[in-house]
Length: 214
Image (cartoon, rainbow, N blue to C red; front, side):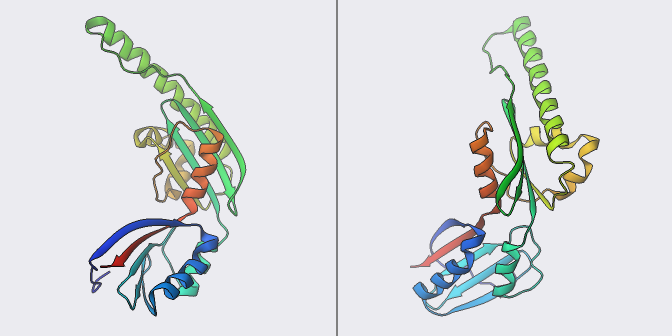
């Protein structure tokens, strides 16, 4: 935000569940003294008397009510959250309501790794690998159409491989989903059910850049 001054010190990133944000803000003030808030639609800055600063990226912004209570209410708002994870070796799609996974599907497809072979063998291998990847992305697309498209989502968070995600969301049946995509983009392993569940928690988490004073 204009006018904000950077603070020298040790900076780290913390993630806080929406249900814990109010208590975290209270604890921040208790640990560091009085606090002052500068609130914007995408970023909230909390500066403490001892020089500590917490910069909070507003999830699923913009923040409309520019106050601490407005921020807490915003992160706790009921949203139907979709998560789509796609990698060459697997895919997962899930719908989360109030943080709980209510509908999901995960799957995998074999895609060969790279090869050191040369010449015609390498070309044949590359064609086979490309066909396998195309089949994997097609399967991921059908799952997204079945699980996510009819779910009346408020927001969609994606992860895995960006090119794979773009390939899936290029399907005309998923036009509305493309408009719902919001950060963060999640780096994940090949999607299994536990990976999908954790991705849902990570998608909801509030990212805070915390700078302690020197």
